[in-house]
Image 1 (cartoon, rainbow, N blue to C red):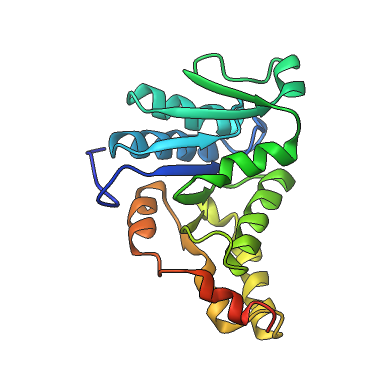
Image 2 (image 1 turned 90 degrees about the vertical axis):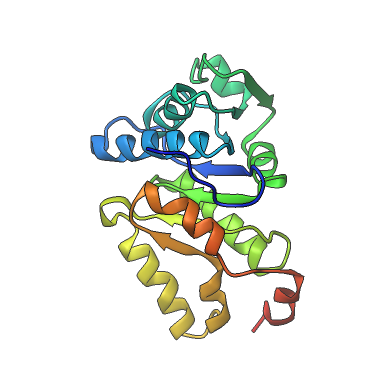
Length: 201
């Protein structure tokens, strides 16, 4: 991997991903690659602070490339020894709600890797806030091994059935590989508070 630039300044990129180690190894390989690519490009990562599964792989990939990684993790997970021990910055919070807020609060972009219900919740909250004009950053879904095919189809159906407008298809961008993420962030359509004008229609 060679250094690349997605923007004129370093970004803080929020990454949602899984802690499962039972899934296909290729998901963790993609997470490791993404961490390395973001770090080599000079961007900072904020994620859920875990050491296992795609979470750990993401952090390890970034740290191996001398990247800056911030973990945000609830205290009960630290007590369960789920926290990544190699992070220079690990912030403990009281609960999952606070964790989600802090991860998204100052981020310039969101990247969702394959994951379970926790990842889905985080991704949909980011989409909802963007739809309401409360978050304006790019949201990139990494569709490793076609994992999100049915979810993407469901989102498109929600537009077809008029629960969302055609404009809402611009809430997210889908890529197949970690190597496409930075270009997707750079090329994402601009989104601003004007989105509130059609949020209910």
